[in-house]
Length: 355
Image (cartoon, rainbow, N blue to C red; front, side):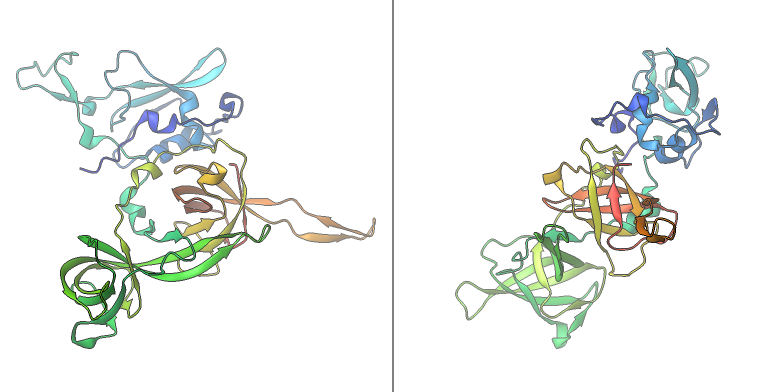
C-alpha cells in the first residue's frame, strides 16, 4: 500500500507566516463540500482557498473524530466562521469506517469503527504525476571522479536497455546490490554570485549486481549487471552511483516556505527551452537557504523595460506571476521542483519567490 495518504497534519508544517491574515477564500467557494473519490487535497483546498497551501489555517479538527488525520470519500467539509475567521469542520461519511463483524450495521459506535486507510484520498494525484518526478540528482562537480563506469553491453553493444546485461569497471571493494546509472550533465553557476552550485547527474537507469570478476588493476573489478530500468538508453562511460530510494512522501506536504525566497529557475529536466505544467525544474536555492521538500513557490516572468516618452527615461514594468511549483527534493545549494500550474510558457531564468 502506498503510504501517501491525506493527512491533516501534512499541511501543519511550520509556515512561518501569520497566515490567518493572509488566508483568502475562493470567491466561488462552497459552504459544504462532500469529498468525492478521485479528489485530492490540492483540489479540495483550491475549492475553498485562492492559496491552497494555507489549508491548515482553516482546518478545524472535531474532537469526536477518532483519527482526524485522514479524509475519505463521503466525508463532508463545512465552512464556518469562528471569531470572524473561516474554519472547516469535518463530518465523517460512511466510507470512513469499517465495521466489526459483530457490530450492529445500523449503528456506528466508537468501539467498533476502524478507519479504512487504503481509501483515504491523497494530497496530489500521484498516479498522474509519478512519471514526472525526477530521479535526477544535483551532485558536486567532482562527484563522478573514481566511480565505476559502463565499459560494454552484452555482445559488445554500445547502447543498452532494460532487461539486458552490461559490464562495468571500477572500484567495487564495497559492492552494493543495486546501483543507479547516471550521466554527467550541466554544471550550474549562480548568475549573481558566480558560485558553483552543483552538477546535474542525469538519471539513465538502474542495475542490479550479478557477479564480480577480478581486473588487471588491483583496486578494480569487472561487474556484470542486469539492467532493471532505463529512462533513456545506457551508453558507454555512463557512471554508477549507489541506488537511492525515491523518498517522495516528503513531496506531499504542501506548505509555504518559512523563509523569504528570491531565486531563479536554473534548468529543466530534459533541457528544453519552454517549461510547462508537470515539468521538473532546478532552482538555485537549497536547504542551505531554508528550502524544504513540499515548499510551494510562485514563478514570475520578468517585467519588460520600456521607454517613457514623456519623462524620456527607462521604466521597468512589474514582474508578472505566471505559475506555481512545489519542491520535492532539496540539495545543499539547489532544489528540484515540479511545476503544478503554468499560466503561460515558462523558461530558464524566470524568477522564483514566495507564493
